[in-house]
Picture 1 (tube, rainbow, N blue to C red):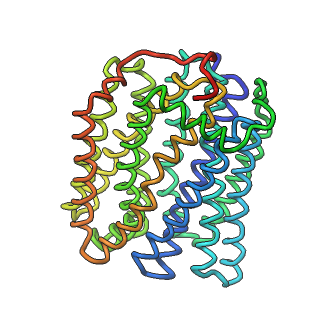
Picture 2 (picture 1 turned 60 degrees about the vertical axis):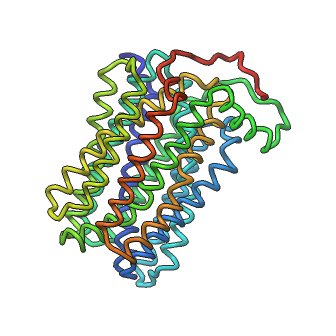
Picture 3 (picture 1 turned 30 degrees about the vertical axis):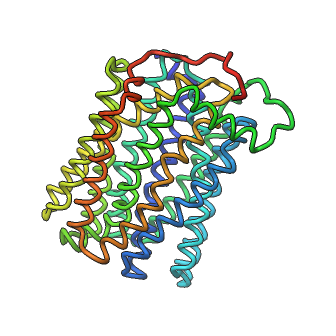
Length: 409
């Protein structure tokens, strides 16, 4: 237990939770402001596209360089840039000059800064904890982060209802700034420097090349891309879905999004258990259940049922996420972690902007029932194919990479 009480782990634990809370509030308030100003499902989708496309581009450009920088510096920069973007929205909101264009611009900045935090944080944890402690360490970090994310939308709904949008913006700016300041006190990771003069293409090639060593990691990434296509289509539609299809309020939406973070119970479960012996069943089974839950939303007309479905989706998604992250961490050598995690993030997120665009068009052209039937069906089709593909049996094989893995192909 001492390893989880070290100063650096506790600081990262608190800062990551504060960061997650700020990000959750940001998703909530920007969605609300865009919908309030535009009343357009297409604009809701466009907001997510403007977030995820810069997110992917930043991962593509900066990912290979993360291993050449201090992880703490990367995380601090990410937090303070996001705080700056929200503070600009706050200033224009207070002065009465807020408009859709400004919200879109701030969303782009947020999308560029946000992806720097995750790969750097995961790589830092992999250095900080011994491999035998990674499963529980990840569960502790993810569980606490999910708790803050669970409280975020509901708290945001309360602040929005009683104090107005400016109070939410002030809160986000404060939380992200505090997170950035806390990260200043992280211990620097001492590691061997990469070869001087390495170019971006070479470093990124190393990250991609590692997937040849473990092709199952590539296919997990493709599966995540397909699943995130459906998730990306659904996420921008949740606010109008709750307000129009269910007939709820902003507070109901806040609770709905908060229940997505009930996934903390999934992280607690993963933390209590040791790494499952049949990882294939756990990971593919959780995604199958996710597809069923997504399709259920198509036939839901009461807020209580929507809340239950949200909680179920979150729980099973977290079981997949923690086991997937630990699977990567145990197999990726130290000198490639930031690069491989960046490639993984790109694979996972590439489907989100495509899904966001399709989701808005489907909801606008048809209705939410058709939208969620299609999205749930796509997830189920993807997981059925995965169940039948022999490569996913590799998930049950024990293998840990060592420092001896070559830098090149």
